[in-house]
Figure (cartoon, helix red, strand yellow):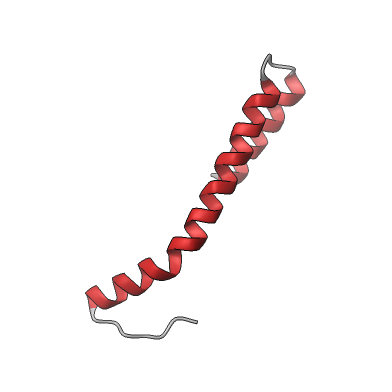
Length: 60
């Protein structure tokens, strides 16, 4: 979804939509924050899911 959002933002900029720069910055910020939040939460949440299912594998 992030890549598609960035492609649509580029289309908006190229078409000269009023406020296109602002829209593009919102898209970039949203994709970046999503990337960071998924990166931070992936390991703890997978450990939690492993504990709930009884899987005790060590994640590296």
